[in-house]
Image (cartoon, rainbow, N blue to C red):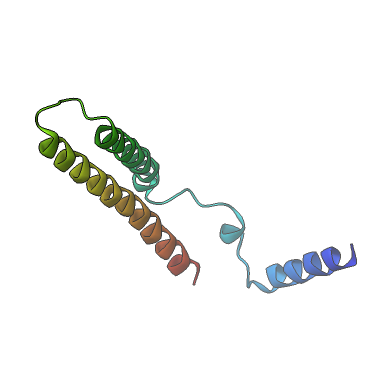
Length: 103
């Protein structure tokens, strides 16, 4: 309890000295909102693509063209993993921007 009061006292002292401005105390609206919305959507789409491609690999729909079905499945799985990596890359860029803006 004493630590919390000490921390609050230190923050209020810095606020009085001007080290913390009123603007930095309020939460700024999110930057790059579209990217933050698209990243989870890409992630969901990627997992759906990987799951359906894997199901196509395990349970082929055609009997005669098994090579073509296997190739389609592998391309689908690799595309899904690439889309998943792209979704994570968007998150990394947003985190880098957030950390850069803090300083």
